[in-house]
Image (cartoon, rainbow, N blue to C red; front, side, top):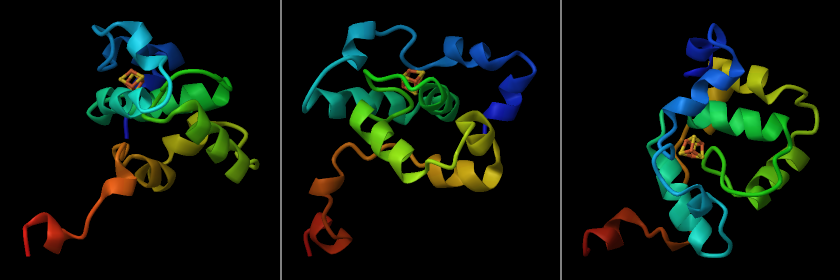
Length: 119
Ligand code: SF4
């Protein structure tokens, strides 16, 4: 979990560590299938949880942040209305483990392992 690492530097400290820092910012503000490609940028980002927490706490409406599209973030906010601070919520190991899995941009295309190996 990375939030505690950045607490001392303040909440904005994570931004310069993002995997997207050298990509065209517009590539994260796309629609439709392009959002799935954008999520791949976030998949290996070392500050994905911080980014997600910030986007959720600030109710950022557009773009892929923290590996989630705006639609996914809205759904998460609806599912967890009791969370007042996503920074604090995701800062705990227990909660961050649940959300620390890399985004699955093609989840609907996943196949059983047996078919993936040609059995
Ligand atoms: S999670 Fe994605 S949008 Fe956020 S800093 Fe990392 S690469 Fe950029």
